[in-house]
Amino acid sequence: MLRLCPLRVEDEQVARAAHEALAAAGYAFLFDHDLDESWDAFIERDRRQLQGFDLPPGRVPAAFLLAWVGDRIVGRASIRLELNEYLASAGGHIGYAVLPEHRRRGHATEILRQSLVVARAAGIREVLVTCAVDNVGSRTVIERCGGEFESTVHDPKEHVEKRRYWIR
Image (tube, rainbow, N blue to C red; front, side):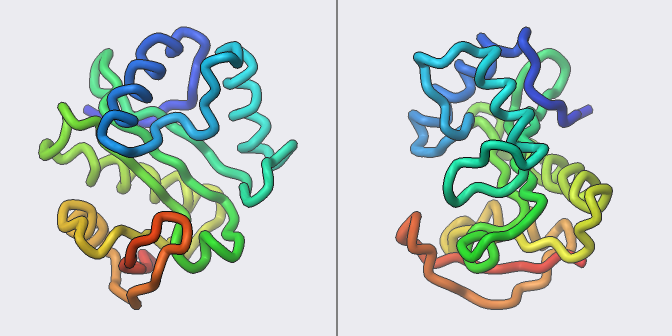
């Protein structure tokens, strides 16, 4: 059974290992991760981001959650509680990732399902989720979770075309 949980002090070693594994696949796991920063400071910064304090430019209040199955991290979710101009166009409310060795087991679908519960609990009724046009796996996950395709847009940060879905 998969569960989403906030970062904890005791997660440092496994979260940093997950960060390295996903970085090798070309994706970010821990956002704004700095190896020189103490783990306690990183967790505090994450907690403050959820509350909307000390946000870096371009960031919005967001919940960052690790996806666990048993005692293993299998992925993560980022649930943006507001949308700025970029997120409203190409980024969306929810971003998720599954570590390469845990893919194709239904984890992404469950991460998105549970993220939708978190978003709705935060008062978000219409959730925007996006994926690269060539990411068939993510497209399938979004559609399985009720995503209704709206349009395709160019993502100026990732330099790819993205499909926009609304989940109501």
